[in-house]
Length: 491
Length: 99
Image (cartoon, rainbow over all chains, first blue to last red; front, side, top):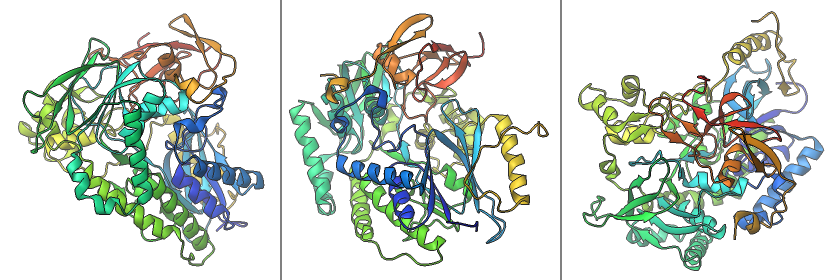
């Protein structure tokens, strides 16, 4: 280990990362908080850019008091020098660089400075805490590439961060707890929300009622949203799904239809709703790329952690959505537990029991119950015509994806990708992977995405050269950041 | 109601940028995507293969659908790039390297 305080790199400044950062810094660890956004908060606490001068940013949020506490805590640690915040840093990989215990910092975090992402920096740390969050899953349907069709979370991000809306009249659709705040948020911002289309069957809600009631705060939150739907006069269409989006060059209408008990569209129920914007989402997917690059075990799509939020790689913790989608309250609890554990273990002790463990148990149970309620329609793929683009980057149609299996004998996602290019584009398959898996019946295995974002070749070369050096000169890199000036000797 | 009123925004003075040579006003702090949405523009790229229009999809930098040319640099994510006075935004065709 390096001289002086132990260094922890926390990647992601959303609820989990901030909670972890504060817990570790309060326990004598020097924290480097690395985040892609210009301001801390993550997607959940995304706020209007400061230049927009929002006097009442809380109007777009709930649990604002929690944010205030996190923000004040971070400010105090920044002031004290116990936390260094690196905003606009897009991490493209984390590597284990420590050769043996005591032989120097164990990890190097490589990050491109955004948004241009031309220059990479290396941050060294004794331990790493992954709080990389998640992103939205959207299953395809004809017309989903039309401008005006956005993810539900995307509509919310643009509203929260830029104070803009995608049109005057919108439909919100899909499945999951995110749709309610998106619909009510757009409505509060002056958008006419023509319908909230949810494939959820409310009868499943009553079946899961016992588990859902285990989180009374959440039940109140749900009731508040239901009240807001009424207040904003948003028509709610449960057991409905999107059939297609229509328009010439831009969205003009969406067709929705009722779902039968078998999860298929009921014939004769389709109706067209004119709209300029369509916000759609089918749940969330954890960002696990960095964990995978480090060799951490991933169960299904979630980074696997123990009771202390430790991954199976020594020195690597994970918290929040990356360990399984569960919402901000769970992320805060997991982040706190992870930060306490990291501090204790770096000091060579065991963490004290945390009251956050009870919150974690309760909110995980709630998330699991929600997961049984919110499901995309069982037969969503029926709506996906052969000419529907599935891979948005490489413009690969559903027909070609299906052919890869039926005519060419592909039996796994990787072979489908090699045969069709689906998943080979800019987004590295993040958007189309669940769709390709669903259309082909192939199992969704952890995708290997190294580097986790596009990196200029020159930066890759320089990172490698620097890495060799850090092995040679041991522990001279104690103060976290090394900006790696270009070296003329390395082309 | 509009989003600015909802949060009682008192933005700093607007500045100008250009979109394909046309001058547009931008409130400080807005990204390319937010500035274009505020102008009622929702697509600014055509795809490499079939030339179809695209704009914002994920809004958080994951999907790379909102690519745009800013100050002659193609393939910038409009949802991430914050604008500065005088920036030149150009709609992008295909790879963005053709012109």
